[in-house]
Length: 163
Image (cartoon, rainbow, N blue to C red; front, side, top):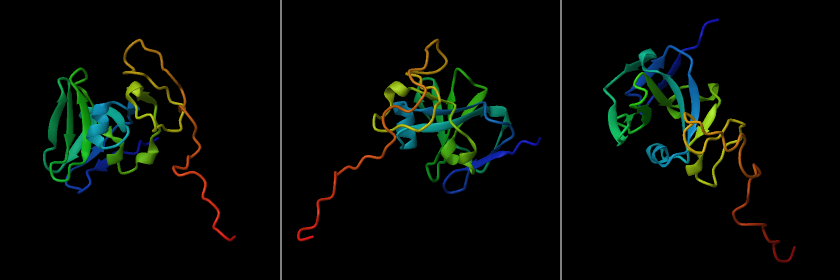
C-alpha cells in the first residue's frame, strides 16, 4: 500500500512543506504557550521525524518561547508552522491547521489538559494528561469533560406581545 504524502503551507503560501512518513503522533496541546502561539484554545500537532520534512520557500522565522522550545512561523503572514523541543532534536511537530488535509488525522492524546480553557473541549475518547504524556502520569480522563450539548448564552426567547 502506498502512503499518501502529507503536505501543507502557511496562509500566504510562501512556505510549504511535504512529509514522506506517517505521523508518529497526533496531539492536542492545551498549554498556555501553545494557545498564545496558535491563537486558539488548544493547538493540534502531528509529530514527525525532522528528516522526512521537505521545506519550500523562504527560511522560516523562529522564536524560542521557553528555554527548551523553538516555534517556527512564516515571517510574511505569521502562520504557525512547527513546535520543536530540545529534548527531541530529531522530531518536529507540525500544526494540524497548516496541513492541506487536516481531517485525515484524529487526535491520539491531549497534553497539558490541566491548563485547558475550561469552556473548550473536543468530542473524542483520546486520553487526557494533566501535564505531558512522557511521564509516569496516568491520564486524568479518556473522554470529553462536561456536556456536549450546545448551550444558549441568552436563555429562552420570550413570546412576542399580543401573540
